[in-house]
Picture 1 (cartoon, rainbow, N blue to C red):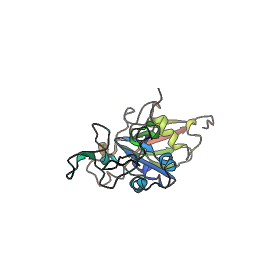
Picture 2 (picture 1 turned 60 degrees about the vertical axis):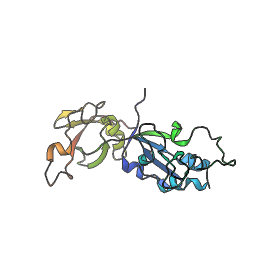
Picture 3 (picture 1 turned 90 degrees about the horizontal axis):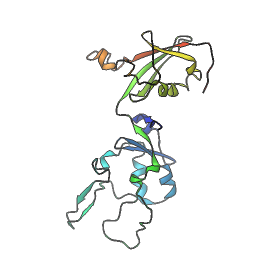
Picture 4 (picture 1 turned 45 degrees about the vertical axis):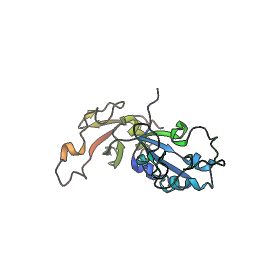
Length: 214
């Protein structure tokens, strides 16, 4: 079984254009670009486009995973609660014969838009190349293994897999997370310090005699 891919809130926020729309809700990340392309020009996309790159968990009931509902004070009927305005696949407040409901599953229940999980907590880590003295500070997901963090780091060093990764002189297990490798979090070391937000645990890379490249 493949591990899910984790994303930081910042990564989601970068996808905020009409041609590239991601959102997150209830702990998952969704690419709604195909939805927008399929329904191009539909005014009911307005709320989704306005929230591109943002978390929209407040639109949903965490228990039912459905859009929030409320009792309409005028009709006394239970309806979807959409304070930003009705959006695509939400039925009109009153019956309409011209509403096309042949779309199948509404987009918020359609797994084909799901691309990964939103990290519950991110961490900052310094990766120091002892061969070149290159020092890079990365924001990573606390749920990611060192192998997955290596993938993030490849754009800075294509040969990153040719290095032994160590923390405080101890070889790291690449299939485990930072926490599982006993790499302390920032607040565990500098809690209460003025440097709490600036300090990051470090990983040192020691070059091996090969040039593995992904």
